[in-house]
Amino acid sequence: MKKRILLIHHSGLLGGAGVSLYHTWIALKEKFDVMCYIPSYPPDLLDFLTEKGLRPKTFPFRLARLTYYSGGNHPLSLRFWYNAVPIVFQIAFWKRVINAERPDIVLVNSKVLCWMSVAFKGVKSICFVRETIPGSPKNLMNLIMKSLLERFDGVAFLSEYDRQQTGLRRARAVVSPDFLDIQEYSAKTTRQEACRSLGISSDTFNVLYVGGLNKLKGIEVLLRATRILKEENIRVIIAGYSGDEIQETLAHNIIKGFRNRRVKRFEKRIISYIVENELQDKISFVGIQKDMARTYSACDVLVFPMINPHQARPAFEVGIQRKPVIITDFPNIMEYIKNGINGLVFKPSDAKSLAEAILMLKKDKGLMSQLGNNNYMHTVRYHTKQYAMNSLGNLINIVLNEPQ
Image (cartoon, rainbow, N blue to C red; front, side, top):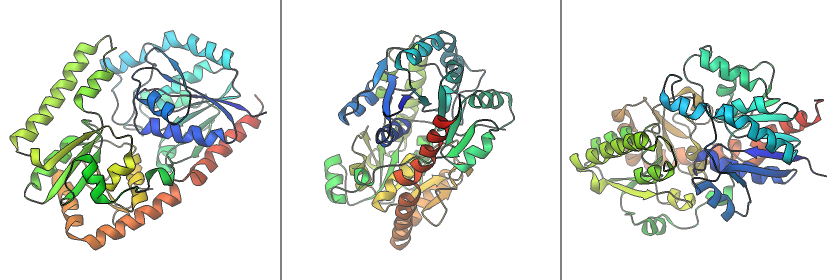
């Protein structure tokens, strides 16, 4: 009889962590009986998983989380405590779930759920850390979250950098990069056909940004770079949640008025910048894209101009189509994106540096091809199921076979 794994995911949004949840679930199903719990709202991830033939169980409330990570919330902020306070009310719920489902092992899909280790007494558990820690590893909040991670039997990290920064001593720690299905991201159409289906020109140098109106992922840096390149034959494709869609996902928040105003202000600032600098003809908003293969087919290069260290799943997804990435120079990405090898890096929040990198690839097709081919080789080397699941699978087996 197969061992039972319970997956718990923190958000109903269809982001990089949600897509990674899907791939991990599919891989684990080969050897384990897998069940998964996700929030019922917003329904984006639920719809996506259902379309893929998976049947997650849902819960009708906002899952509590400790949103302290690079790009997250400061412990003194209202938003941090809004997310954290429900912990005291939700521990009992998850204990009931454990008693009802009787899993052999629980896997939570984000460090923001590290608090759940207190609910898993008597059951083996693993936390998949998908975030980079902010500031010094020795600051108080990092030490608190480290102590919560130590209560898990195992912890998986996306990179060796993240593993070393956290510095666990008791819990078994491994590195298991995000991975993908090569066929799912391979080009199904020509570049011209992909552009036509998205309603954009194929006669321009197309720069893809996958992050919507997300400040952390660097939309403002990209727009400033676009202004610098205004006279070039360049088009910026912006995929991801728009301001309206972000507000839709916040509709159930008890402090939605405050948060919606914040989102509206940011969206208004972005739109005003575009209009004031006459960039309307340089930018195409294509919204949420479930078929990312088509979106990658339409571009020449991907940019990921994050303003704080962040995970960058699109950087290797685009590699399947032999295309390079331009990304902010932070230490957490150095294991997988090497400057001048499979991509280019630029100075954090430096629009001029980003513009120069875009222009370099636009003018040097040979370099762009070389970087793209290398990005393909890096992707199939480090981001396939065989490589990534080897360490995670071994960790699960070791934890399962250890005495309680």
